[in-house]
Image (tube, rainbow, N blue to C red; front, side, top):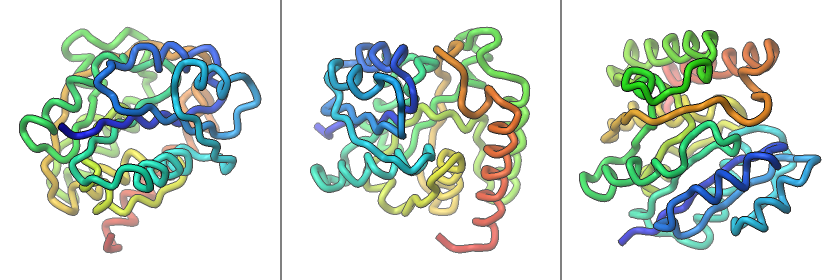
Length: 236
């Protein structure tokens, strides 16, 4: 049976991080929280909840993820292991992790995306949890992925599971908000076996560092679109 590792980037999530970790199913081998420069008690709460805590002082979602991946690769080099990415704000439902990893274990998928958009269709997404500009940004991004690479996604949702070997082939490098779209673009370029499943989604605890501010939304949107068009003209 493959190992399952959960990566949680976290910045000032002391109110939420303990709930996230506690709700993760016990099929997981190790939970890695990468603290991204918090000035609250995120680190201590994560440790007390049983997670391995790393520190990445360079601000950026991707930078935090890459730090945790480096740790996993140094400890557990098996390509069949599964790596799950999960936000630390308690907007996702960690218990649904089993639904994400099962298609990899049973049907050999490389990447499984938890789609909040599909979750909305099935009544699993809480009203008001997905802001209008986030929905628009998702639609625009997945439109371009379909246009250029003929892969159809509905969401860039951060809750996702990927086979470790597939993740290595992607050669991830984004250190900021382009992380999720880079993964999906590269999966499409490499013609990986991808799947989306509906996941539940609720209003996060605390304010979003991205969609919660106009500047954060603009910055993230710019990086996401730049990432898409970069790989239209560049090889991996």
